[in-house]
Image (cartoon, rainbow, N blue to C red; front, side, top):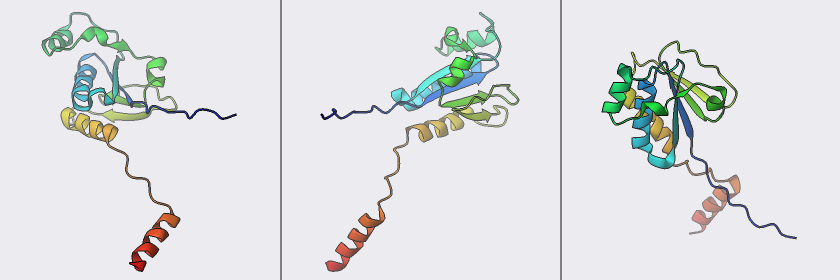
Length: 146
């Protein structure tokens, strides 16, 4: 009995931006979505409860973002992410096994440049698989015959 071939669909990298409030994670997520398109899944979470109608919300709405998309940081959000980016120095984020964790101190780094580097890293085409020793020998022997 033969089993039909299984085709695996590559999963998109999942990034979770975490901040104290909704403004920095929402902005970073918006930038990554614009740079990487649908090749990356992006979510945001805050460590503090949202302050509806606060100044950060006004700024996000003016930028065309929806502060209501902000989630409260949870174990589920951390488990579903491949990469967790903490936006702010000293942000207390639990480190669960699985995701890769990064901390970006927004007072020290250029957010746009960091998001661009992240986008490039996540959407890069994997390097060609190194050829086996046998393949390299065949190439060398074939080249010497010519």
